[in-house]
Amino acid sequence: MRPRVAIGTTGGTISMAASSPDGPVAVAVEGEQLAAPLSTWLPGVDIESTTLARLGSPELTIADVVRVIGFARRSVDEGARGVVIVQGTDTLEEVAYLLDLVWDRPEPLIVTGAMRASDDPGAEGMGNLVAAVRVALEPRIRSMGALAVLNDEAHLASLVTKVDANALTAFKSTSWGPVAKVVEGEVVVAYAPVGRPRPLPLPPPDAPRIPILMAGLDDDGEAIRAICASRPRGLVISAMGSGHVPVAMADAAEEAVASGIPVVFASRTGAGTTTRNSYGYPGSEVDLLRRGLIGAGWLDARKSRLLLSVLVSTRATREEIADEFALRGRL
Image 1 (cartoon, rainbow, N blue to C red):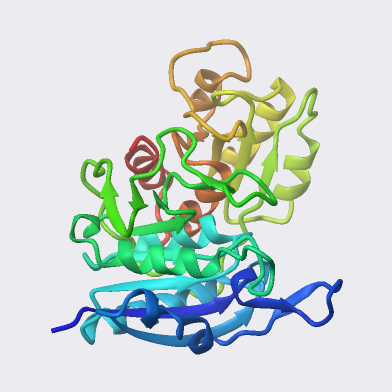
Image 2: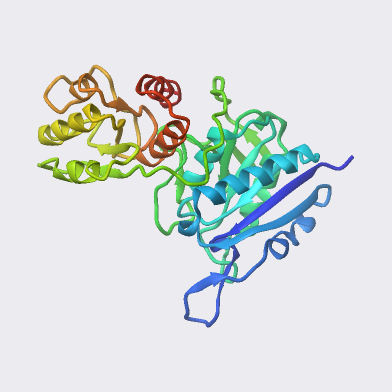
């Protein structure tokens, strides 16, 4: 029996084209049109493509991701060996991670897109789509959760980051590298993650409000107080180095924790992990942990926000939130 892969498209640059030679691009290609050429490159695979949305990725919502999960689950339950989700790259790493948090099937769930529009010279979208289908069919990728596949590289959703606004090589797993590569049409798997945390419950479509605030030189903490006055469900601080903030900011964050708002701190550097026992000065990670903040580990601020969002949606306690970040943030 020929293997079957389901493709769900939500829009993004990969499906965009310009209305004039020098004009901006907009979504112009339906998912079925986008996937049609795949039969040339993958003649032994049955492809079923469905248009789920026609949006730029900053327009996507938690409700859209919930619908994507429903599509992926139905596709696998109906016999698909893997699922590929096509979207824009601006929020690709976030959507991939949210999918990974709740994906409860062993079949691979792949997210892909493109940096160049479909009518650009050298558009790489079809190459990314072919690679994504190949990774979705690779037996050694099973049970790895959601992955991002672009530029012939497959990245774990928990590690991948968009590191360049324009380049074809925009997606990297800066601390660890890709889990696999596609070479001469074959998927070469470099390593497998050591276990995978249990899937979390599907979040409600109305996402809780959890702002991200970046720490800066001599921050006085008043932005935290202003945010917390409106009672968000949580707060993520994109902290300096391995988890450090100015003392005034630490004071304000401690006030937020005391008021019942869970506060997570991640590193703003783009790679590496928050530490637990390296620095002991005021505003350091040791001080923040003592004040009741939660370290994100290897997760960046954007992924920390999504994990915290899912957890507070399930009414997790502060201790339960800390345990989940310890599990998922320390790989």
